[in-house]
Image (cartoon, rainbow, N blue to C red; front, top):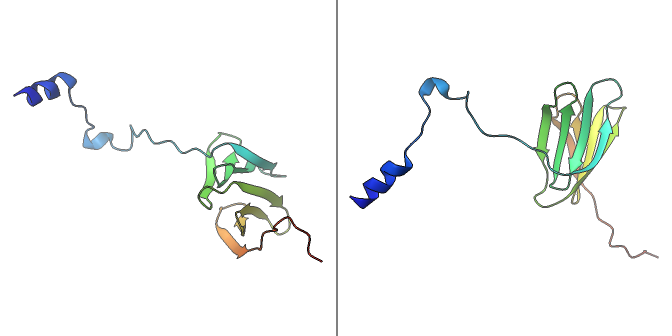
Length: 120
């Protein structure tokens, strides 16, 4: 009795089947920018974030052209290379090359990280 009364007071809301996809509240973000590079000829901004995301933003409408989550908890650094057209990221010890147009992974290699002590 009491549970039904409480549920009745709060009310229930739902979507109709034809509204699915129209009223979705999911929003994709990239995080706090750590490094950014502008494309020379396209209206695109390539960036890497403190949250470990490598992304490209369309500067015409602000949409995310592509977004890739790198190593969890690893800040990502990036560099834009013109020839070949690759967006290079470093997340943890993984160096990755992404296609600038489609955002697909072209290559990835593990690189040894420096310990900060010089070697003789």
